[in-house]
Image 1 (cartoon, rainbow, N blue to C red):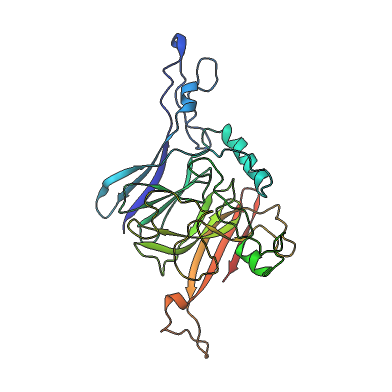
Image 2 (cartoon, helix red, strand yellow):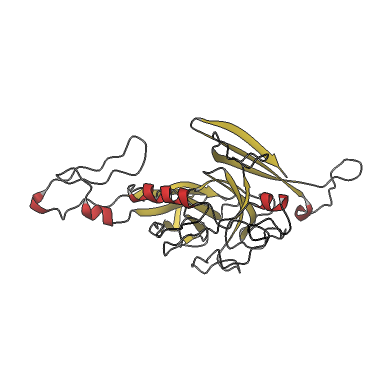
Length: 330
């Protein structure tokens, strides 16, 4: 419907609190296109004041059909959150520790890196480098931090580790877990990763809800999720819900809301031995298509509803010094 959306990040103002009239270098954009470098004092170190000021992150939106911006064209994002605490014994603890170490020395750890708009133009998903994700509806002037993406608002882990839906289906029944019970399915994206691709269900998405969609991440993983606009039962009322407290049944084929992204597949894992491929890359694109069920003669049934159609997924992984692979399944 004519919406154009972008995300920008503004650096902190120059540190004017330096003593002795210390000079401040001008702000410059790094060659990698990253956030403008923090201002530096006379000693060459990072500015103490600038290091304490979170960057201003904005979502800019305008409508080409309406001739420009609309009320609320600039929507601020909440300040980025750093993960706190040690999660010893966690299967993803080493990855999370590396991510925290990188975040502590990187002023751009929460920089917005991806903006996704659904086919209706009503639903916007913004992905940040620290794993956080934010949702904005075309009828709303407030961006909502989504639970299960990056750390929670209080810095605690926003992910419950577990197996994928495919892995759980391959090992059903007792004995799948170490304690004899079925292994738990992972809720929330893996710490250290962020959303890099979205597959929209163009046949079923509406202005009020995207229905079920598929998210791809920088770790080569696919997740099932859904987004709902303001005023719906799935809307969190502007508050992020704890993904570990929600009751999520990934086997439920309905289009009901999900409190957290559900891990579907690990594309960079060899199905034969469950080992991670060393040349695996990030998910660069996801395509969803609903295939109508065929009749006995092999022709498609025109009377079939979209809800009964078979869902086919095509995903691509790759990256610098990584092999490009296409993955397809239904």
